[in-house]
Image (cartoon, rainbow, N blue to C red):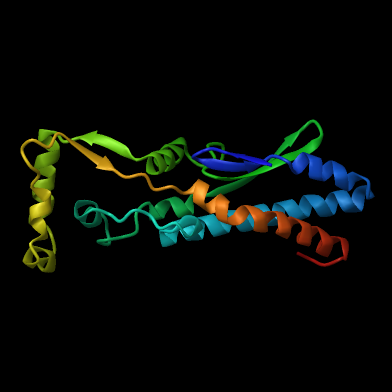
Length: 202
């Protein structure tokens, strides 16, 4: 029915759905196209909202480390919250007309850097602890709010001498969202089509 990637998800059986609607004439074909677009837009909005809430598809992101939490403004902001504002939606067309709808982090509609950030967020990442990074962490420790200083949270910024690598855990986005939404998306497209054929504005 569908195929996914880390950065986006596309529903590929749209062309078959559109062909089936052609038997009903131009009205049915137009209604089917509208039904698909409306659902694609809804999915795009839902994915953006759930990313900003930190739980796409109900799957809550791994919590931020103390260092990561205080490295954001405001402190403790949800991981990758800004990715929610760059989710996009696109309809692809082929020789036979509309072939699929795609939502997620789409290079053609978002900057390539955001797509890379989304992929890295979902895969997790390892990065080296250099001398420069250690100095930066010490500066962050010195600038912590008074409450954090009193709670002793500055100690997390002084890494062990033998620590040479750090790890950011994977935070899945596309896969859990689509697992939750796939069945309802199919139902919604059919419902949208029926409403449009009945003359409703959707």
